[in-house]
Image 1 (tube, rainbow, N blue to C red):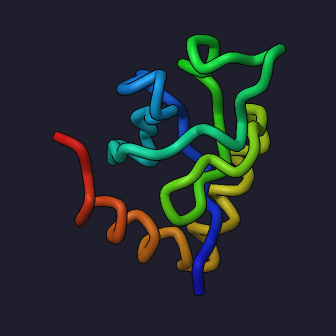
Image 2: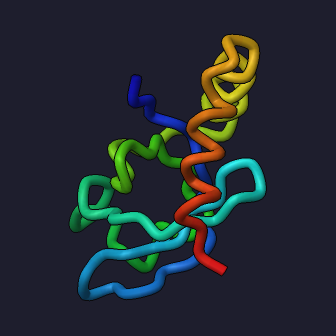
Length: 93
């Protein structure tokens, strides 16, 4: 099962290609943020945003409370562990 998992954008790596680094439970991974930017919320304004990450893409912006609750539920269900492990395998160092 593929899940969307909450992460926080910690830096913009390539604004032209819309690539950023997201941190999920201490694991960092490069993702594409094209789906969460627009004229009102450009690439440069994304640092610090909480996003729902799925297969290397930020699919939507969420607030910190939603992120914490989602991570809590996923952890309780045991689903987050597999997703976090998969992210560790492709982590940015």
